[in-house]
Length: 290
Ligand SMILES: CSC[C@H]1O[C@H](OP(=O)(O)O)[C@H](O)[C@@H]1O
Ligand SMILES: Nc1ncnc2[nH]cnc12
Image 1 (cartoon, rainbow, N blue to C red):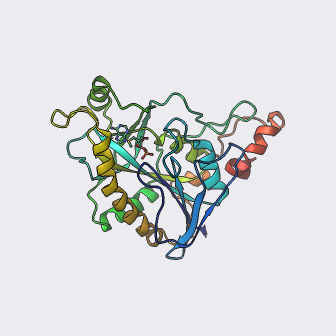
Image 2 (cartoon, rainbow, N blue to C red):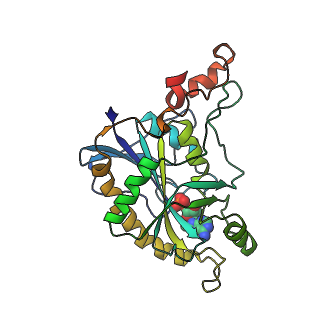
Image 3 (tube, rainbow, N blue to C red):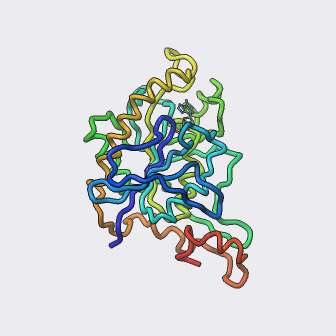
């Protein structure tokens, strides 16, 4: 058994969480540069919690400029065991309506201008992301959302686009009709891949704000409408987050799905062939295996 430490990465519209005991914004330095912002540490119901605003307070980072590696490294370095992403998303499904939450379980990665791995020349690793989210953590998110009175859908494929512009109509129709995506956003990739490399359980909660541009009765995405829906979603998101510590508990058994052992057998570079500089940078993320 280890101690649970829950990290919440707040997306657009969520720049803090309330109700933490002993709240403190702390600066974390990482070998991958500075995270998006300071992180808020504290505890709730006897469980340690950490909150990181993905775009920084004041919404400074674009989806492309978010320092994904620094963010995940910082959470790992702080001893977090579980990471919950709470994101604003468009919907490709009539029944996944604005205001609903979707517990995402798959991704299609269309991002193309981001660093996607902690590993590289001098320390090569290949982890599986066939099942990129943790079912145990997703269960807790689903229960927390239902208990908070939110209309929640379990399972959905998240199309991660580069942005910052929204999709064209042709793209929106293709993602929905040919590719079978359910929701669209700009940030969960490479975040989910990096969390897996760092052996962190990761769950993604999509807060639906709009129907992207495919829906004949809703027209194109309008950022003012997204922001209005976001404000309601953000309160729901905070209400869901507040229920997670009691559901997960302070003591944590190993992940039954192996998220916390993802690097076992993944590192291919022989010890004597490894780049000492890169190995040093991997101290928090992969120190257990190096
Ligand atoms: C405000 S609409 C577009 C913006 O919102 C989402 O951010 P996040 O995933 O961090 O909630 C989306 O991915 C875009 O970055
Ligand atoms: N339609 C959309 N496309 C991409 N990211 C989004 N975030 C919220 N709505 C979105």
